[in-house]
Length: 509
Image (cartoon, rainbow, N blue to C red; front, side, top):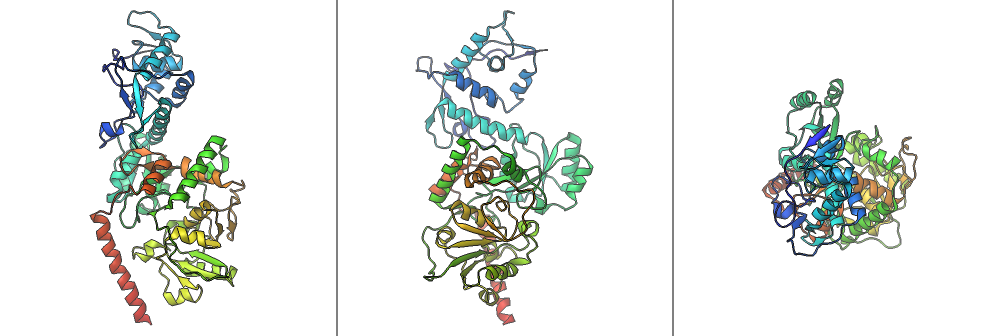
């Protein structure tokens, strides 16, 4: 089988685009997204080593890889007809597929590799997030990240259950290089996915519980989407769109009833030394900046703590959250959780920390002040969380992500539910251990799986898919979007709900 290509358009000297170039991200100016800039014929060129060509071949980046995937098309061809400087000819040469030139003669393999070196060397490369110039190897790694994202998105036919104020961001996360899947009703999404032989992606808490079994009955892969662990500036309940999501084909990280993609990653991945070193650097950067799921908190402890006593932080949650329902090991809400903490910490000074969405009045889980203080020594919702984590002896959680954030900071963490970070030998576990989690992990293995391999990230400044390091840098530097009119309206709604809750408490005495 021979493949035909368009006439050659060589890069360099202004005759065509660089071989290593950015996809046309929707709504993003090409000047912002560009990772390469052509150079003139007389400009100096960096040497292109074999190791770089090998990495390009391994990552399958270069040319318009996001469109009709020339790498996949050419890999199955017996030969292609093209000029040696064409994108397709260079890809064929890197893959070892014969190339027939316009004169009908085979193009020598060495000539194809030299053409690849010339095309790659005919550009300067830039970090599209900082604007700084980088080498070609860094550009290849960025393209590889995007390629991996597009490949995972290609079979998503439709999405459902996405709130209207998240839909633009979800489209960005799920763009496959050509299109983003439409947001449809559950029934319409299943129909479209079944007709196209694709998958349906859903926000689990916003679609009918029966939708998964309906998808299984129709042979439609069912993908779950949820906020990531480094989410955005502010609360999701306050309508701040996420800068990170997870897309899970097996389950979801907060649902202990079955294994998720994250659990399988943690259980089976052979973590390389390079990946673990990267995870350690990322963890240190997160700790240094104070970054967490909701952006940044203050860096000074504002709560007075008693000297000479064991200090325990008990972290409340949204009681009807799916992470509590499916990962809470049957504990009946925040008051029950607080009773259990007191039972195992009878002499400790306990600080109860209600969930910010509950404090804001958006979600369920309020514990009356008197009931909370019958078990805890202090109820505090205002002290900056990260300095508080560093000041206490132990952090008790049900399934709260705060337990993971405490682990990042080297804290002792006691867990009463079955969250994704429990059962690997890093926490003190009071709930029954899951038989699936038999591996013992180091902290940076947990970080590598949870923050590097599993989630997806979008830079809130450029709107381009990025690495976790970029997002942590944005959070740390304060380059996050300011509250918009939606979040302000939502804030007023929460304030009214808080007033009603307090008034109801007083009426009950």
